[in-house]
Figure 1 (cartoon, helix red, strand yellow):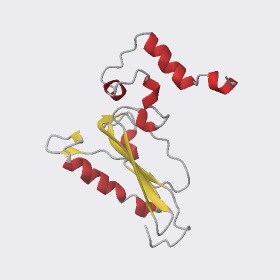
Figure 2 (figure 1 turned 60 degrees about the vertical axis):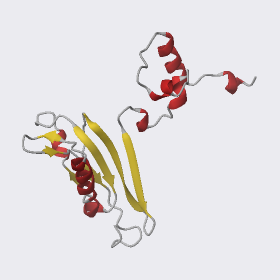
Figure 3 (figure 1 turned 135 degrees about the vertical axis):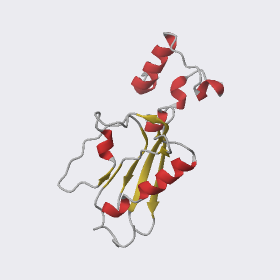
Figure 4 (figure 1 turned 30 degrees about the horizontal axis):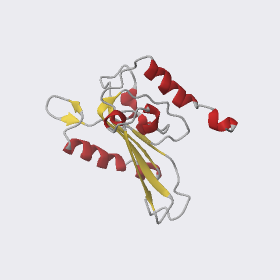
Length: 159
C-alpha cells in the first residue's frame, strides 16, 4: 500500500475521533442515508455548516456576479471594512454595540456600487419567507453586503 493511501487526513481523523468519543451526530443527514462515516458528507466548504446555504450567479456577458450566503435561522456576523472607497451596505449593523445580533444573509457582489442593489433581491426573498429581525410591526431581513470594483473588466454597463 502506498504511503499516501495509508494516511488519514486531518478532517477524517477529527470526525473519527469525535465519533469514537460518542459525539452526538443526531439529526445530521449522513446518518439518515445509512453512512457510518461522518466525513463522507463533508467537503471542507462553508456549506458543511448546518443551516448555511450558498448560491452564486455569474453574468455570461461580462465577468461579474454575486454570491449569497444564506443563514435563514440567523447567525452572528462580523466585518472588517478596509480600503479607500469601500462599497458596503448594512455592515454598520454588525458592530456589537448595536441592537442587531444576527444576520440572515450576506451578499458579495461585483459591479461596484451598482452591485449592492442585488441585496434588495435577497431581502425580498427572505421577506417572502417571513425571515428577519422581529421589529414588532414587520420582520426585517438583515443582509449586509459588500462589493468590489470590477467595472474596468468588460462592458461597465452590464451589471
